[in-house]
Length: 352
Image 1 (spheres, rainbow, N blue to C red):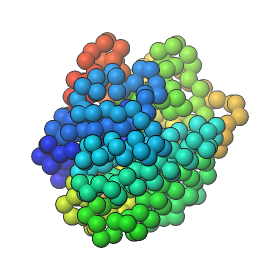
Image 2: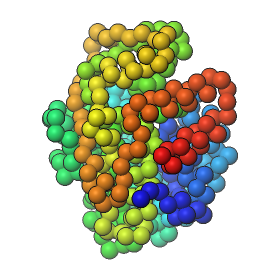
Image 3: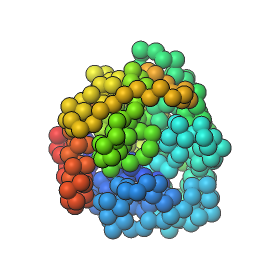
């Protein structure tokens, strides 16, 4: 069982956060399957960025630059698209930034979700909404047991807490407004997503690449922290499979879902950096001894429900994921056509 490209061919899809790293990969994948993709997002946050490097705008029906907090503009954009499916990725996605900008983080991640669902109430073409939250929405007890969808939500930092709130908002709208509706809502929780074209600050792979490009020693905050690492295409494949099920089978799939890596791919930060340093020998790393805010030290996901009910499972090992990232950025340094490189990686994953 895998992704049914025929389902997406000609289908209208509204995608918030399409100028971001994860949203950009999803928009590209949808476009090559023939979907009519309408994007809604703030301007690109980094330069360079995946959206521009892959000429993604040329593949979309519409690319609206707008704030998820602007209900009027958001509603108008969705009305124009008349989508069958919405993927909601627009967010303030960084833990450390959430400490610096807690109000903006909660407004974007919570009120932004409310705005999207309010707009959806008025548009009868929508059959499925997939709200992308995070694995950090769980109340993290630093346990060795992987978190299951039924585990308690929480969040130590503003980012994690805001995403737990977005989960609760989605559940409230599902129960209060869409229980008898044809529109079905699911939430999805992925691991630490990595891939080519991510230049966001305070993320391990972009920080490594920045250090390499600038001949600087990489400083690592928490070398022993264990995370569920996975290539960006892994959870995106799950989101696509889930959205199809929501449209076809409805209530059986309108709930929360984990899309994490295999247990052996939950590795400490130091393992990732050592692997990359073996591949790119010009980079060295050390421990950052400056004071830093709290971040979880151990986080594991249980994705057995997605395996059993969706037939989804991870395809690429962590080593393969890291090799693909190196391949992508080497091609970028060589000024190759990054849309072609990215599509090649999508096809390679899809046929794996």
